[in-house]
Image 1 (cartoon, rainbow, N blue to C red):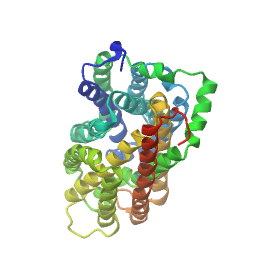
Image 2 (image 1 turned 135 degrees about the horizontal axis):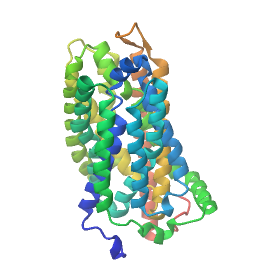
Image 3 (image 1 turned 90 degrees about the vertical axis):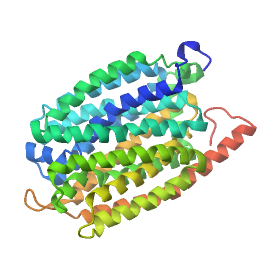
Image 4 (image 1 turned 30 degrees about the vertical axis):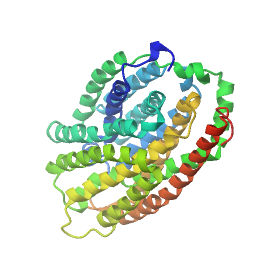
Length: 422
């Protein structure tokens, strides 16, 4: 960056600050899912409806991501993050005041409306600051916020819910958000270099650019890859806590240990995967992760062998998912040009959250309940769909990677304009 006002003390500091923001964002998003059975009992709805809670958040995030794609590139990224995270904290606190499934979903909608833009702009900050040569490692560190949220946040939230009631984790997350977001925003430098590269445009021009972006084959395949990844994951993920407790008999008092172990495994594997993607490419690493995840889902949710350790199952699930997710996110970061990166990522966030909502809602529709406190039904059907979508991912990764590499080679020989067809 030529503007000294915007030059950070170091790339590492920016990545650390964005990671802190993402920690609160992700914690707010992931905590209600392992707490799902507690929420169901506290508010009186069936455990097969847990996916609707996650779906409400992701559907709202999809809408805000779509709307935000028209104007996010017109502002200082630091200011956008400040507004988005403030709204997210308020929505999180509102979740602790819910009195029914409907009011809980309403609070999650508010959180999702602000959480979606916070994610896309945070990732844009990293992509703006970190060169592509080692962006995979940087994104892996930011994505490690997901693992840290599981290692620290989810186990604590589960124990707070068990001892103080299901409302406590919402209030504690909101309070932590005030502290972490305030610190991070005060330390982040202004982020306006993208405006000098053409990010600040009128609405009509933004609309034209959005249409051109979406019309590009490389973007269409990238967004399809996003949709398949997220739908395949979220048809199953919101129901894991209820499944291991009700169907396998894993004790509620040890649930925090399960998510702690899974988070540690995910954190360790993400750091390794980031370097492997930078060295070997997204397709090869994503292929390995997709195959490993498919085998894990089959063993754990379709043909579960009696006595197979639940802890081992969840560690394998989180590790293989990390291989898949880091590969896909790193490759997606290479698709846009700098001056419309936030717009592209906002649209991608919309696709991501809409697909997550569709997957979570489909899971709730397919699943059934025996009498309260007993097993979820049709888990095998949900898992089979998860496997099919996961196995489709490597083909899409290959298609995106080939197009990105071909475009980069062409631009290296004769650079094209930012919105030239790919």
